[in-house]
Length: 345
Image (cartoon, rainbow, N blue to C red):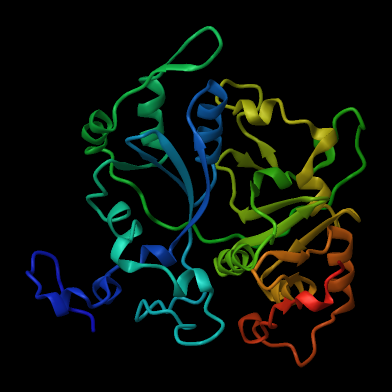
């Protein structure tokens, strides 16, 4: 079907009804994972944006209305590199969020095309520097002046986005060593410099659980549960990490987010040091069937049972899945639905 409706070609109605996916040459929806959104209202927000852009394969986007988005640049593991088709297409294992995505109102195709979408800009480190230079703040450190999208689009013409994907690094961090309790960072192998955590919605509905399956389809992602907080962990290395330590420590280049990080309450170490704490659990794609099997939902799709981190640790440790080891997308379990008659009055 590719070739129907190439750029500049006029289409008859029946041709226009053919999915635009058939002529998409880059499949950006399968190569950019949306992570979170935020507003650029304070100096802390600006620092957060610059902090994120220190990490490999992280890109930002901003709209004319001032809405900022974060994307992880990494091809979905189920995308066929030769055909740019989904290897799960037509199977029950394809995430519902992909099946129901409307290609006729596709944001990705315009936003991530070479020319970009009108009113939306892609932002990398070099482009962020241009934005920062044009910002002004009041005494409360709130943004009071910022460049327009139109002026930035003109400035960005000479700063093309580098869309090259940095290969994932699978080298394990050095084990923690006993250190001074006054500064836990001294003995830490820098977990926070090799993984970025983004808050996510727990599986409060079938749709939110399905989104987790979709997100886990991108290499380098995992779900991190710390107590009652759910986060998406993205494997990405900070550009300033050298020899296991921050190369800009003690300089103005170091993000405020890092400078004021509370090492005693570090969620990275709670999740990543050794097997993690009892109140933490890490869930990868191969663990998703166990997560799905441990959840139950009401007939309206809202969650009836969502296990806590400690229970999820037990489920994963017990290896409750039946059958031989196989790719996770071939083991997906049906979601449990609680019958109204079985509910407590």
